[in-house]
Image (tube, rainbow, N blue to C red; front, top):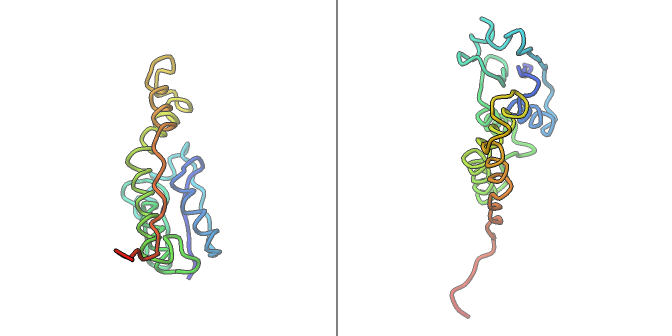
Length: 154
């Protein structure tokens, strides 16, 4: 059984999957799709992912899409080295940071990238500047919880 990954250049969510495969040192077959030719919307791709988006991972007969779902699958199927931590505390911290990024940072980074690279925003207006300030001023994630037990007296 070989792992196949379908991805597109310029897709940060696809890069997540490629990085995970490399980090885990898993052999895979790379299928770089050309967005300009709408290859991600081909009948073959829509059979794998009806949303017509990348990344898509095929592992034998199993197909998974959505980058975090793929990472979770890879971490459970191929546990070493772990992506989501070795302890419940590490896993909780990692998932919290992912959720914070997706909720607070990613939408603003998307606005910046779209405005700059695709011309989807008025660069003379405040939209991009506001998004840049929001990203730059985002509070840092809190440190990982201590695994030491604290007594109540002593």
